[in-house]
Length: 206
Image (cartoon, rainbow, N blue to C red; front, side, top):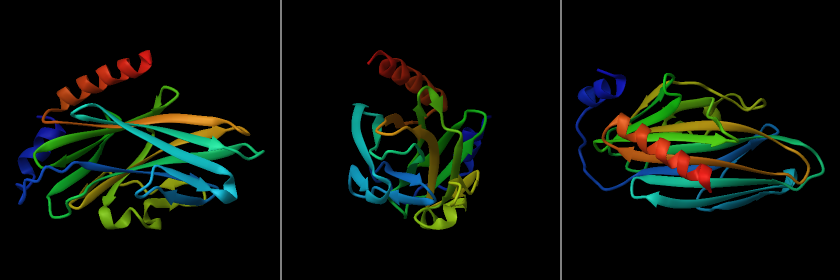
């Protein structure tokens, strides 16, 4: 029995069965500071001369896919980290977020569903991630070093749970970096991985 199956058997039964889904909030870290894009798909960071834009689509009923564009309008090279936060919006709902080092992916369990969370930039996947109680993710507690943009690693968090991953980019003057992130929902881990493989093949052809 794998870890997901064990967690599903031991996880308390949901008190509510609402048709809600995993929420995605993008963000950006640069020069020891970070911002979240709450309730918006575009943000200008004036002091850094950076613009971040997010385009979201749903190529399949079980897939939410986001393309993120980061524009460096300054005359300097910028080291930035894209942030992706995911959490289940119903805080009453029993849910769980955990990191799978073997799969190099984040999984959320909620409402009898499994959610796979992942992303990539120039063919490279996520390398830094954490899972935390939802009330911590909008605070500096997500960082072990805010100055270096290093996440405070926790492998698992219980309800209300959230996850955060980062992807590092080096953007030259007037460069545009593009990365993708996605969530896939289903009832079986193998189904999720198979759908993800099909999704990646589809995006490669674009």
